[in-house]
Image (tube, rainbow, N blue to C red):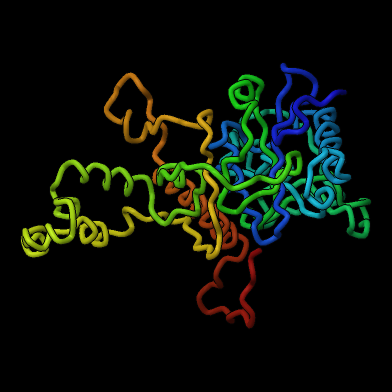
Length: 363
């Protein structure tokens, strides 16, 4: 089985009709990301978190990781292949009430049957490690990659699957269908830049480029920009509307001469009066960290959230702040469901009964 474009970060195996993959490996453990962040990164790059639909596809991924681990990809300056570090795949557990169960049944299906692929795949192929999934509060799935760990009861902790808490930090693997890859097959950078994943199938990246668009920062680093897309759109709109005095006149001296500070309101006062509307709920303040934008013309995209918002013929992309709010809402709903299951498992004591000495812990 030959590898196509193996020097690049996106790798296709088995010809143009087969899916392609992109492996995001973070050499810095502290830079790895949570499940939903990984899913969003893949979707913003035109793919989805990896779904493994057959034993053959599982072997393909294993083969690719083996080559990367041994440094066979030919990367330069990387100091060898990838080391220990599990990878998120696109398998996650839905709660029983979310399943389409017959109305007459009064029992919940077994835990392994509650897992499904985030990209909509209906494949039932699974490659669980011995005694997994453990369920409980662990609802997202990783592929083990611990080559230096001592073997457990199920053998080495490598390539088998394990359920983990969705907020844990791991590497991840994206999957692209052939049509999507044909558009992006010359891509030389990942979408997620704020934490700098190391893709071991390419030589070290050099900083460069002149693109300084804040919009690019929002799209490329979903947790690196303190404000959301609505903030950028509002600033650009008021640059021309002149409702506030912030962008009037050509210099501070001219503003002082026109007494704008006393005669007009500031746009920043308006924005600061409702910060929850304009700030990014997933912002992570990372000091001494540089974002390297993509300056190549092949990465240019129309800012549909601004330029196409009034055009009924063009379907604008989902605004970043709306996507982030929906992501946050999903996390809140998941926590609420976990709390509900905990309450059902440990109901409060009846009136008059002796109180519990130790409150039960729901994990």
